[in-house]
Image (cartoon, rainbow, N blue to C red; front, side, top):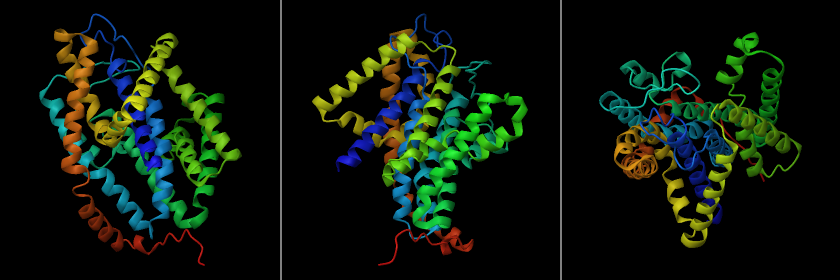
Length: 359
């Protein structure tokens, strides 16, 4: 129970870091209609996403070991993600059609979801961004990364059985090192096609994070884990340097405030706040950005930017919790059955995952 609670709390931390970036720095405060910046700002929301990837690496390794065949594994993962994703995709799309959302026309932080079409809605519903469709909400990119990870790790489990984690970690290392080497010594335009393969198809820059989670689950405390951590650190530094607004002093202030919040939650509330946020983290992640930013814009003229952020979070949290209760687990068994039947026609259910040696 303690391990499960810790994972939920870690999910809560990851979600709050993502949300802190999106609500304080994703859109310039002047465009949000505020004469002043938030009192606390966070500049690297991908830290939270990377934490989600590490958690996913840990939990997916566990899920594979409890799956009898490849079809069962894929069906479990799709049924976990898809129902709530479809609802969030539709709700966010309709919201952006009828309510004002922030617009940043160009630059590093360009943002405009008001022009999404019904084709984009369909394309997002089936994760077709690689085919040229635009995301209804930009945060959905990470869900596609997760799905690609599920696909690859399933293949490794089918090929290497009980040694799947070891070979997947080595694969992640090789892809991560290659990606880092190219980024360090070549210009982007010189390896455009290779870049698309590494980043789009093979998700090379994110594989070390999944590998860290898998290594921790399998207790591989050796050189590959160390190198994965170094690769992940390099990627994190690169992402942080990409934000032109990055301010170390404000980052330290935010870090201190966040640590105080975590400590208060732990000692006064036994970690319940982070547990609750972690429990609804997937739903919150799907709904928070477009709707939350729009609400902040609405509230700023009345209460100022700091209170506007708090009010937006409360409303989005309430809506996300309701959506999770209505959809997230309610249709999972039916969709799992449907996916198993579909995979059986493709003979994927014949690919066994015999990870344990026979006695």
